Amino acid sequence: MATVRMAGGEITVGNVFCIGRNYAAHAVELGNAIETEEPMVFLKPTSSVLKVGEPLRLPAWSQDVHHEAELVLLIGRDARDIGPERALSVVAGYGIGLDLTARDVQAQAKQKGHPWTKSKGFPGAACISDFVPADDVAGASRFRFSLTVNGTVRQSGDTDLMLFPLPVLVSYLSRQYGLSAGDMIYTGTPAGVGPLQAGDCLLLTLDGLIEARFKVTE
Ligand code: ZN
Image (cartoon, rainbow, N blue to C red; front, top):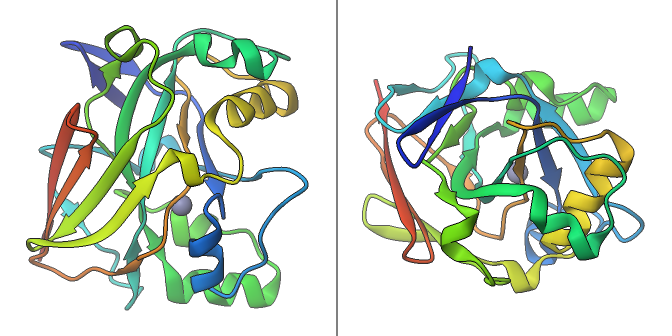
């Protein structure tokens, strides 16, 4: 059973929703179209969740596992068909995570028209920090975050640059799928994605609110 931590408590993870191509500069760097009609959504299995302190091993069947640093929302209560103006009221916490992606395997899947599950669903593919309670950031509508690898900043994110802002994402998911307490939403990655290798030390930071460290083990 996958769990995440917030304010000293453990919360059982429900669905793991992920948003693709939510920053124009990242869509462009991978040669993808910019989504304008509706958010592009995919899912990860809960067995892919990896918390701070757990060993991160890259799958042996990929030679090109990329980091995607993302702001992650934790849903606090069940929600169906909620409007954008009230959507953030169902968010219990804010965290920072990595949507790890086996880029070579994803490219094969894209070619074949197959789902992305193999490339984005392996154990450890959903790295996640502890969550900051939403009450602690009440009124905040903009978040900045970053990923540093071996001391070098690789990715910097700013939610103001999202194609589909947070309230729109939460509203959309509540209408299209329904949201449940314990669901997580990976909200998309900014530009700067790139490969990881054994020995890499990763530092994720979310607006001075929280940070998370992961080390890629041999
Ligand atoms: Zn992603």
